[in-house]
Length: 265
Image (cartoon, rainbow, N blue to C red; front, top):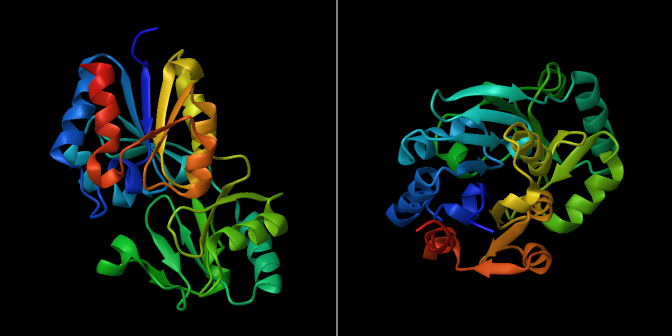
């Protein structure tokens, strides 16, 4: 068998360095993939509003699956081409159940264009460095369809919180986590990185056995289990390291690029 026909990689903690940049070595490896005729897809928890720096670094090539599978985003045009949203009535019920059992949670919502958050939702990452989002009440937060609902707890262990949230609302949404803090990301029921990647691969007539995927956090697990070949980076979550057959160097050591250079040179 030749080189994989499709490369699917997570961004933060996997292909990107810890400062959020694409290293020159990794950018060159991505170019090798595309120059070979293979398809390169970024599969990320990031919303589209966080994708512009990445799009520029890879010269606006390819597609991105954003928000853990809820959106397909064209890096050439920087526009959403497909979406799977959570309906307002589902949002209301999810928030009601969670707040009843875990009252210390604070919520935010990603929409197709921008986001909003409750006043006690502590921003982090790129959002903490910019004037971002609107402070709104819960009723407003859940009043229109959204891409992703996020729930933040000030103290709980992320894995324990994920188990609690899954038990309470796993019949309504698909919860996961990826940030290293007690932040649960919820997509529409059945929507994962794997579901979006599988749909895209089917349109391209690419089989799972022809796909190689890279990841580092639990939100990557469905994609890694679906792909024919799966790699974790050395800095990955313990659950991810246990689930894959292959491990490459850490994100800050260009682990993804090291594998791609061998496959596509």
